[in-house]
Length: 138
Image (cartoon, rainbow, N blue to C red; front, side, top):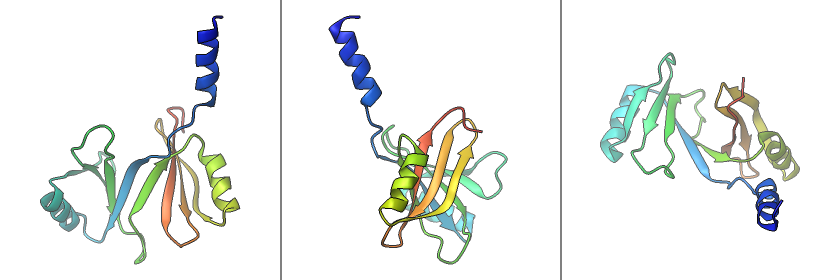
């Protein structure tokens, strides 16, 4: 193995997943009303996901590094907008959330063939979610 290949291999083993915003969710009391508002304001294309009654896809129309999102029926009066942050492991990152004083609101959940998420609360009572890409998720 050449020195160049060895350096590349060790670098890829240690490379980190950037903690980037990759998805967001907007809760709504009336999905059609919210669709009209956000489409009118930003020009977003918002359509129901196939086979999902209360979850709609938001196509923001941006480049690949601009996240799309979802719109869902509000679950409670305090249900906030939730941002999803990409991590290498939701299990390890969730443990770190707790260690740093945050809380786990929804444990590791699979999105089949896409990945896993964990919904968390930070020390200031803000909600956010961790997202791990994994096409073997079941």
